[in-house]
Image (cartoon, rainbow, N blue to C red; front, side):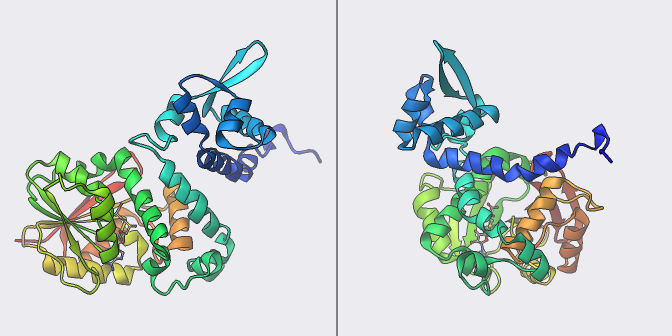
Length: 347
Ligand code: SAM
């Protein structure tokens, strides 16, 4: 028989077209639609935009109409001609030049994550990441696969960098970190979180610990000499001695690794940590019963497709910290994507 009216599969149909929306945003960014409109400082017609981005008129018209439908562009009607301008969100987050631009994250989603997700079914079946199928690179060494070329490494660093402009302050102020003067950001990458620490806590210094070629790029392109409270330390955090510190930050590190690897790393951190010191984990926390947030459930699938790890609950992180010797673990939810977990080393 006919399904009841309330059986209309609204959600399912929305989910089916979810990737159409993602790709519309990715392509509009890649073609520079939002940049052209920002530079013009007035609404432009489809013809003007198609010329500026070097694309077909027909294709551009359809793309602009979809962007307007998605509320990324405003439309202006003038004598039967439609013109377009950026909405405020598009102008702040989708233009390349904005200080809080998501452009680089979108590029990475479009060129890397999207390709890995093509093999999600295989990832679930096999229980492992899909670098070999997606990019033809061995995934024996995770970061060798992620950093398969210098260009890929820089793109990854830009991806890591961009989110902390949006929610970095929340994670570094979730706990009062002012008692900790010497901070080591393990896997500190481009230094975006280190910068958030030095601006929130005027008395601290931060050492960014990362792989040699990451440190080199971070020094050259991301952290200016002017920031004298940020220094660098090259090494492998699973093999080399860790610098002594009052506080170690591990932001989006443990979610890359198995429980076994996490305990190995946290034990090394515990041994290097000064008595009375602490470790701050910055991760997207799952609810204790795994029932949400849906973004984090999807991130955990992303970790399956792309890494050796998973997203975890606060209790799961507390168990890893306890196994490494840390005590008095607490967590704080920020209400944004990333949360904070703090564990202590007794005096
Ligand atoms: N903490 C940064 C953030 O949240 O934006 C970056 C997180 S990223 C997922 C993981 C970082 O760990 C990368 O910068 C990577 O280069 C670094 N890393 C991975 N393996 C490492 C190792 N064995 N030794 C030192 N750093 C490592």
